[in-house]
Length: 331
Image (cartoon, rainbow, N blue to C red; front, top):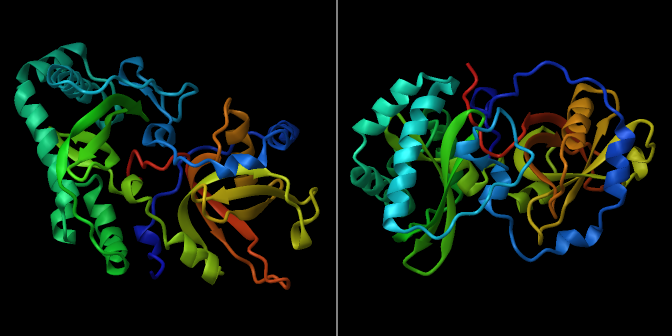
């Protein structure tokens, strides 16, 4: 798949430079982690990738420090209650600002819970059964930005329509000051699938990028081609200490392991100490109080320098987003 032009890439983070931090805390924590964690047989859940708390706790911008709590399988009345709550919360969180409580109550009063639940089912069913780019565009978040990404993606990948059965589990969460639903959906085939949806002006939209884990290219293609130009990927990243060849000098480089899954070969990537990206990554991991088997889910840009030994070592160019889900579109 060809690289997307700059104006179609996921927007950069907008934040002030992070203060330098004690890198020894990161590296010492990394040394204590077992490499066997990569052999985990189960893929992480979407709720772990989002790293959020329940919506009622009104998480501040950025990832929370607690894992979101699971909820019981969805019953019809329970789902309606959550949807009504989410609709009211949408009035608070939409557009990234807090609205008066009176407007929240007004929003909830206008919502027909049965219609809202049916609308969610209808959106999920239509999304899962879509077999063309045109079918998907009206069902996804940030459609204007992601529509060219969808077109590129399905120029290389075939659609795999699925028949929706029912929603098994749901969780209302807040991410970056906006309300979302994390769903576990049962297909008629018996397969389960996790989706993230947002209520945007009364319409449910699915986050396509996290569903397909969109990146510039497929992971196996990335390993084969080792592109010299930076690629943008959704990866799990973990501090590591594999310093070798051109990157053997620990005083010059920081090492990270980039993984796509528990079964795919990881990439060891390096960033120059003291650089803005290095400082951002060090600060990010110092603020993380727990680890996942494969590392933290981030959106990264990196490239493969032409090394004499032909190794798959990469250089990190940019920390694009601190979670796989893009909350806001850069203005």
